Image (tube, rainbow, N blue to C red; front, side, top):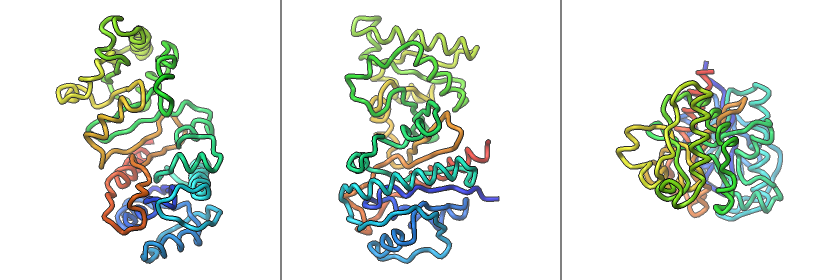
Length: 307
């Protein structure tokens, strides 16, 4: 039986709905997608794109209606993308679907709509009261983020032995890898304290996590500027980065088109595309890359089958 996947439609002023429509024929062969969008907004999107609604395009009635303004940051489109996401979460929480896959939202639009969260993962963390972990990547390389959407100056204070120990253990239990590279924070991983002392906390957390798991799973702190070198990537598939751009800069340089986002350590399965709303090409019927979305759907299916 094909798994049911709830798809939150993302910001309707962006490229998400076009991706959903163009990929529908392909993904409906491997799952039963349920798109969180109402009839009025779907018809308006298709009219703007000058395409027909696929006959088997099953929707969940996410309430709300507004005028689509391609490429613009809008309070109303931000609110609708949030409501679509919440509907998908509730469908998964009630076990009416096997997993959810999210199309891109715009953080500025959420802010305009007075939504206090900066992204999907923070919503999931709050909704389920669990320490959701953000991991991005593809089969060639995955990166778990210890800190996410916070200013860079706040990162060092967040790196504590206890918090990082818990994160590492939860991360390993989710990905079940026997070898995970953990990056240091400072250049040269601080050169034994010459350039900072955060690596002391990282080293202690690695030691604690390996003791808890009764196996030498975590290696590090790795020197950040060589952690993603070709030789290093031969040794590791999974990495833990201390902050957002430390991990995602190299990942997107290497695997931008095929990477996905996976939320770990939750009672539901959630995957996502690893790209933004692409406002610059929204509704222009230009060639769009579907690889990240299709990979995200496939990962959601794989995770639901392995439960």
